[in-house]
Image 1 (cartoon, rainbow, N blue to C red):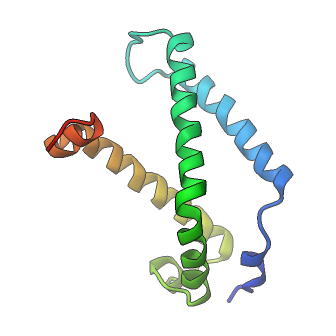
Image 2 (image 1 turned 90 degrees about the vertical axis):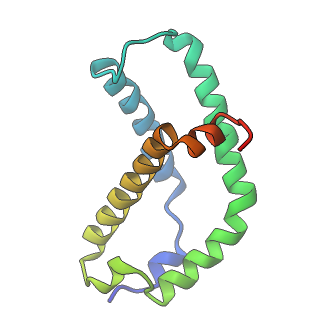
Length: 128
């Protein structure tokens, strides 16, 4: 069983910067190499809009959700609540599985917001 001390130490600031700084160019390069669909608007037109939405989303999460999510995450972690802690995986494998499952869940949500009529309407801001 892992020590709960690792939960108390936040990820080093410089490591967080390195991860984010390398992920963003990596995603841009992948999009250039393997685009999902033909471009309608150029990247120069879309990129500022996407960065603004991402920035506002990050700020909203930090200000509104963090005060609720942080204590809840500590509670869940300390009591080992959930599927992955019960599997007894090594810490590195549990972390990888958690990231993959979270990404897959977010991907499914994204697909549903394009295919389920009521979610499509909500994502476009249309009344129900």
